Amino acid sequence: MANKSIVAVTNCPAGIAHTYMVAEAIQQKGEARGYTVHVETQGASGVENQLTAEQIKEADYVILALGKGMTDSDRVRFNNKKVIELPVSEALKRVDEIMDNLESEAKLFQTTKVHMGTTKGTKAEGIMTHLMAGVSAALPFVIGGGLLMAIGSIMAQFGAPNVAPGEGEMASLAWVLNTVGGLGFTMMIPIMGAYIANSIGDKPALAPAFLCTYLANSADLLGTETGGGFLGAVVIGLSVGYFVKAFRKVKLPKEIQSLLGFVIIPFVTLLVFGLLTYYVLGPVMAWLMNALVTMLSSIPSELKLLAAFLVGCMLAFDMGGPVNKAAWFFSFSLVGSGVYDWYGIVGVVTVIPPMAAAIATWIRPQLFTQAERDMSISSFIVGCTVATEPAIPYALAAPLPMISANVIAGGIAGIASMALGVQRTAPGIGIFDPLLGLMYPIPSYYIALAIGLVLNVALIIVLKGVWLKKREEKAALEA
Image (tube, rainbow, N blue to C red):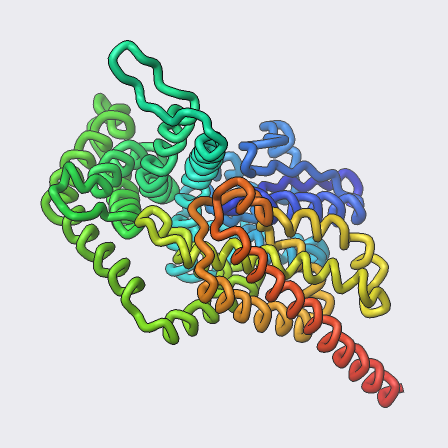
């Protein structure tokens, strides 16, 4: 194993927790086995520790732990390398197994082949990867915009003027902050559609998808009651992406082949989908989005609470995995249409599992290993910022009691959030969002959070205590 080297790339949709947790795990586990390890993180702060051509050239193995996919132009760096590609959430669970079986897990990647890595996965999983790439790109717009609007609103509440520019008068600071922040929400949907298409068709798909999604989301331009919202972004992003991906395979005379990527494809795609969006896709998506919002607003309260329980359970189930992301995507996608109660459930439930695990270690430390007790403070702090992933190590150590406790508490917290009318208008920084004006009513949020947190801690202590006792009894019988 002497002089063996590993390079890795990690990313996840939010670019906050999984990206760095998996990077750290790969670094530590690889170095513990004698490998030289270099990890590039593609997180919320952009690309950090970018792999050099020399590091890639010298690497014996490449690990791609991806949550938001990777463009073809990014993948080409690893041509003719032994590559292991898997979802970032799976990488965190399997890092020891991967490190012990690098040779058997790795597949030779060649740019002439369409597929890379293992043959696991489905078309649905591939589409979800593209969708989360779009969400990941849109998040900075809505986070930054939401925080600016929150600051502007707080200033206005404390008496600062909120005045638009007029004849010979400058706009007030609060108005400027609200206006600039509002641009983030305006651009969120077009950016989402653009980067869904970019994830599939690479850069030539970016501009056509952005412009067409902007058109589909503009009720004024379309002459409809509402815009296409996230449905428009998804349909247009996927359609443009796959159209461009197929278009790129067209062979033209050598003299004009170089124009294909940055002139011909963008022009033809924008022409086709611009007309298609204006006459068909935009109006249809706007009608569907309006129907969805109307349906969600009119369902009976008892069914709404049942759905809230389901969403809460899903958010708490796999702590950043595909089930969590599906519930998160559904809730977040409604924000652009002014429906905030489902995203309110996200703000309540996603902070609970890591915080509850940490608190349980402080109340009943004998139920946890020393390693789990040592990570409790960091789990609590990171959990406060709406990153559920710190709860994963606790769940891996005792899956049945921890996941059961999380799911039950998450579902009840979802009901409490919906019943108390918790609204979340934008992503933020977790339990402090109500203080920034991103969640309201403030008392309702903290009541729903307290209900879920107390219940989760109690269930962890009870269920894990029973689980450990049965495991000890079984071990004694076997001995």
